[in-house]
Image (cartoon, rainbow, N blue to C red; front, side, top):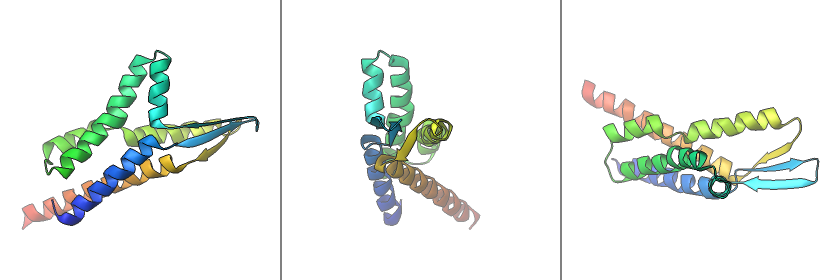
Length: 144
């Protein structure tokens, strides 16, 4: 992997870790109740509420597999495994689900996106850009 792609993958990983740890959004209801939530906070809530299936789904597909994908890219173990993990690492779907929820709930709630959301979005966009570049440059290499 070229040095520039390694650097961009490192930035992608840092943004992902920040996005998981930092608050995604602040939800205010009737100007009385304010609540912030993060991915890690959701995981803790799932465990404390006994929602083990939700915990496993979000932890595996939203945190572990995306992080594993980035670590494999940083280690230079790309190819099949990274492409395979792209199919199952669902952070972008998770973020889209949050956006749909925010749009649907916006009539009764006041919702503000916070730094965790933007870090996750940056990580996702950077990851897709790296993957697209790798695919294009790989195809050019095969054609030559």
